[in-house]
Length: 75
View (cartoon, rainbow, N blue to C red):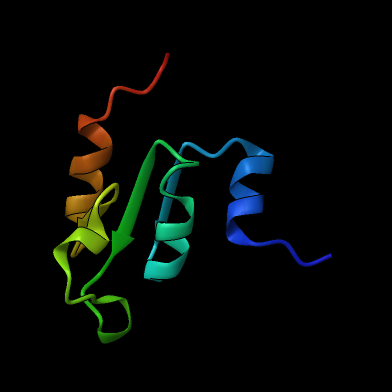
């Protein structure tokens, strides 16, 4: 059975999604607590800054770690 990334995140109760595909991060930004668009690639760039609302954009793993370390996950 094929599932969408959104369905998979909902099914497992994901808190974080890190992906280099803007479509997947956009689709899941209201499902996961920390949606992260990874990397600066031609396929994940948008011309309208509003397209990035509700997600974190990280150009490298150091930025990803910083975002995750600053988020207050439940203990």
